[in-house]
Length: 187
Image (cartoon, rainbow, N blue to C red; front, side):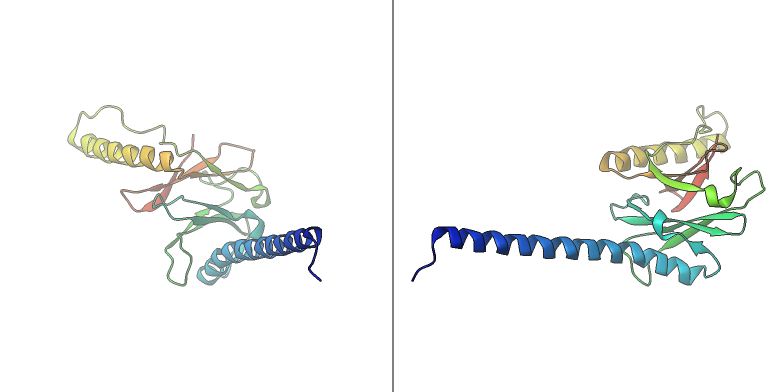
């Protein structure tokens, strides 16, 4: 006896539903592993810092078209921003920025109030606008080169990082492609 068309359709629908469920489970598992790897790496590099698992942001922040991880860390009154360049592995490049509490270069509120978010790439407000002297001209050329790379990276979807606590001006962190490291500015 041959199965009816209705029975065949039901079997096909069940098979598709099972495949979709397994695919979603694998996708969730991959996301968890992708987010866990940077935390593990940062914890090896700075065991004394409490890296916040719920703060992991994934985006291209190093302007190299790879997905990077940005993670918030806390230790006492200090706030840390860990950046791990993708793809993630034991030899991934990384940078850890510290913003000490109770200082001009720190947040105004308690470290526990610190928040990370991605933002549009923006060039610092104090970029030289005229190129009069030779020293300024050298800096002007560097900023022009950086600006060109920023515009290209922003068009590809690269992001900057915003560290704030809603008590005072945020830190705007970006990867300087000319210097090859993250830097920050603040109003």
